[in-house]
Amino acid sequence: MDMGIAGRTALVCAASKGLGRGCAEALAAEGVNLVITARTAETLEATAASIRSKYGVNVQAVACDITTPEGHAAALAACPQPDILVNNAGGPPPGDFRNFTHDMWIKALEANMLTPIELIKRTIDGMIDRGFGRIVNITSSSVKAPIDVLGLSNGARSGLTGFVAGVARKVASTGVTINNLLPGTFDTDRIAVTFEAQAKAQNVSIDEVRARRAEALPAGRFGNPDEFGRTCAFLCSVHAGYIIGQNILIDGGAYPGTY
Ligand code: NAD
Image (cartoon, rainbow, N blue to C red; front, side, top):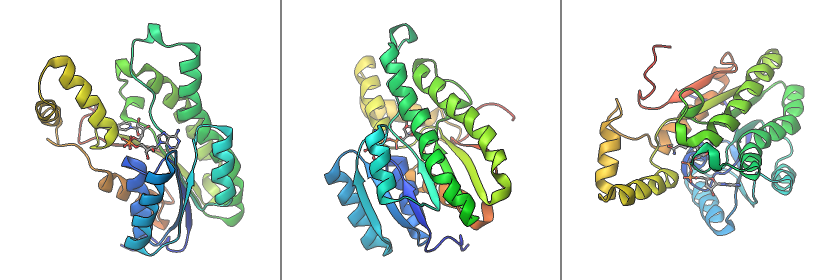
């Protein structure tokens, strides 16, 4: 299927690895030119070079911490008028809510709620003027089914979700859509770190932890960033203009509810 977005420009945040990279690659495969961000210049530049040579699109790499005002400014200086915005950043640390300090809450809010809201605020009017825009926020299945040790994530991402629910409908008649993608368990570096910690705590091998976790999922496996990215590319396509303000779970069936 032709997604109808070749030649468009996308700003994809936190995209040197994992789910952000999956989205960047899938958009590039549709002929979308990219500005990608991540903190480490070397890794980010290597990703940009790989995407350029694989898909032949323009890819500009902007090394910055996307959760800071300087990061917002750098990303938007390189890409002031994106047609597509994919919001993403690292997730907050796990822990007991009694140990979450005010500073930790502010960091989680900056990363997983206020940065996406700021980038939406600063790009959406251009999209409305041009009559086309696609905004996809990478959130988490924890928005739908909270994970107790991820209180910072549950809270901050729910704030973004509530904001998006209102704005998405407000702009729906202008050709601009805003939706959230909710990953369950995907095979990325972030998950590998969690498995390492669990293996250590339970005194078993990492392979054993991985096998047990995969078995517990209805799909019997983890998701991969490529299939996540393709769902993102579809949401950014011309065919998805009637999908407004949705929270789309991609979790291998892990969420147990009927609705
Ligand atoms: P990852 O560690 O594989 O990749 C994260 C990417 O974000 C990297 O490119 C990293 O350089 C970049 N990054 C992190 N913090 C940044 C910052 N402040 N500024 C710029 N770039 C930054 O992680 P992932 O698994 O792809 O996760 C992406 C998001 O999805 C995270 O918020 C994570 O919490 C969430 N999530 C992931 C899963 C999963 O199973 N992988 C599940 C639920 C939610």
